[in-house]
Image (cartoon, helix red, strand yellow):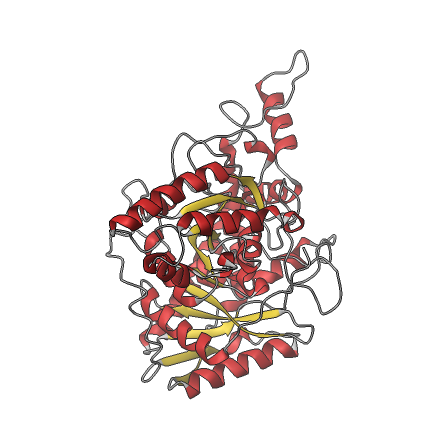
Length: 495
């Protein structure tokens, strides 16, 4: 078999079980692709020795005939997941040299399922960003280009390295995390599938924290079936995570019927934003028509507090980040600044954090500290929490009316050029999360599915939002949308 790295998880799994290829061959094909893709800057910590060792063990399990679904499949790991003995920096200088002595629950689940880790993937520093431009490793680059234009485009963020690697066939799939859209937005920008499960479905233990009440891990894959396979392997109850849900994990792949008859799809009027590009509106209307043709009932719905979601998110997330990032002080691990004679503990903290945290992280820590301060706690943080409750209630009311899932755009535009949004106004960048943050605030599952391209040939995606804990039903609806859209475009190789 040739071009093994271009296979999806399901195709590769079936090929392995049929004896048409081996995990070693799959892994070597991916490692070769990674070596030739330095221009994308997707992989930032390479682990070929670990990958080949895991592949050999997977091949042995496959021969024995007791191989789980992910056995022998090479994947990339976002740099936010702690991996034992492998650098885990969260894209930040402050964690330089940090080698965890433990394995995150999600990565352990994947290894138990036989997955092969090719290396660690680029990301925005501490997952704070929508364009992968805040990383200590430098920008990750989107494998897609605008027509014949050679402008470097963003792969989205914060899981930009994961999105770029999957879209460019450097790995069969990758892990991502989503705090305000960090799986779904980069998936949309690169023409792949990305699902954020219900908050609590995947353990957060061993995942470097950004905003603890919003963070959730999920898979980034080449199609919906692959997302179902990988999500099942990632999910589990975990006593080490107090927010982990003690619920059985369904067979997500078996649920992929794509049968939309009798399903109700909600279309929220509040997602029709002023100034939304015509191409996004057309994409959305096409998606509505596809779901209707597949047998679904289309229902206009209202989520009245949507307009407050971004402001609430950008109070709550920085507040939690300022608390979580207080642990990085240069005392026990990671980067420590060189001190001058006479410097004390305060100077060490100040210098270490000034050197270790990038500008965007510093900005959010300062915003978070401000909204949590005594004089402003009620005015900002408590008010944002109340708004979050109202947003959650909006979704509960809609689902109580019998709506099965909600169809919206995934992003307000296709991928933009690196540096194009790096203006003096960070709010312009934050507006990229306008369609995705509500899902995190309400703790719901959401999936981005590529359904078309813009006039410059760049991929665009729609988002489906599901009921809590009903990822199986959400994936089946996404499968129907994927089949109807028939999106098969791939980036032309330039790297």
